[in-house]
Length: 348
Image (cartoon, rainbow, N blue to C red; front, side, top):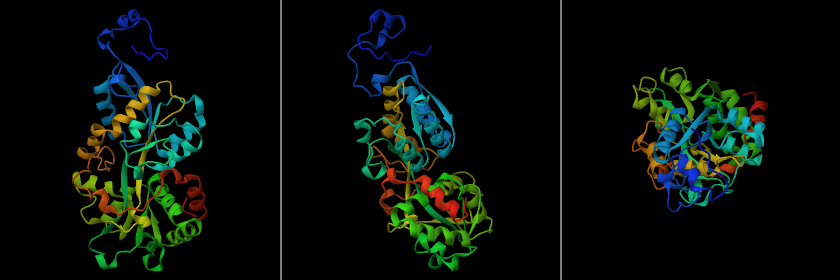
């Protein structure tokens, strides 16, 4: 039986007992806390994060609170567009993404509730928007994976911007149609401005080879089809943790030095203003940014960065502080403008 929290306090205890909740009696926990939500219930999550990762979060949350989590899976852009289209009628309680631009799109449509302050407090400022309308839940670093037999350290680009130079023609790959790459371009736009971004995209069009998907681009480097590919770090570490067959000939290069190529993309989580189960939705967001939720990242096989509650990253990853990422407010990443610029450059 699905039992929804009544909006009115002080409902007759007899009704509560009839639902089998008498054992939960006593003083209520603070609103939004996991213990306050430890009753039967349900929330719907529109999930653009990796399904296996979010399922692990959801299962752990349900085990602790008794609240069922229903996942609806889609891509960043697919899910954000759907939420904007549904507006106040959306059945979603929570929205999770891989990258920030989709979160900014929903925020700009005015559809997010404020994130509870105790959840915000768990996440360092560099991993959440200044607005407080959503929060970071995980992160991934931009890297250039390269063929160790073709490139030596002295031949690697000093900056991501160098990939637009003539000497890199025909030597690198990317997946321009994906939300991952478009987030990288969004960061470039925020850091360097429209003119510099247009110039870089024009050079990219001349120089790169397009593949569908980051893993496919990395496989192409591994197979010797192209010298390097601009992707996120976890594709390499994930493959290495399995058989390594698609990454045995490559290694990741980190641009560092606050370069646009050192961009760390924040995966976001937010509660919809229209949620009928706001307390449960807020509790879920608090859980995944809490110690137990972040340990799923630290100990699991997603190889995304834990960013909250003081939980360090998976020991196989380069520590977050050593990435030397540029400072970017994730709320300012603009997917619409990036799509316009990439289309103009002939990349989409």
